[in-house]
Length: 103
Image (cartoon, rainbow, N blue to C red; front, side, top):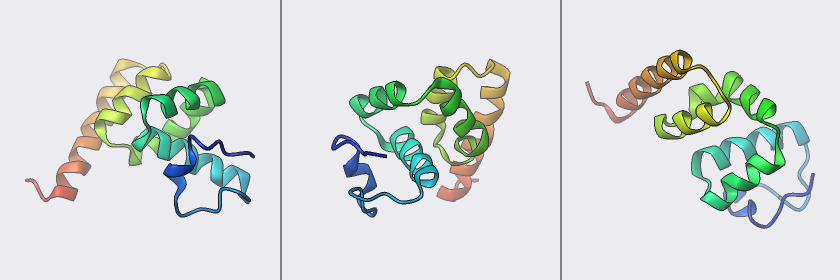
């Protein structure tokens, strides 16, 4: 897997010249771009990976780790039903409150 220069700043702790574990690196790239990516990086992600692949990531991991705003955006991009998105957002907001120590 060749990681473009555009994405490398999001992967500062990895050796992006020789990424081993392609499947693991793919998950890291998807997660980082979804969490912290610029508009240009997000557009790259949508071109690089199928909606089905991004959808699987959200289903398997993203719904538990993405902040509410990003989860809402990506879940809608991937076509999840509104009822599912609402449920995930409630969970994400509760996690965020716990992390910040808000009752």
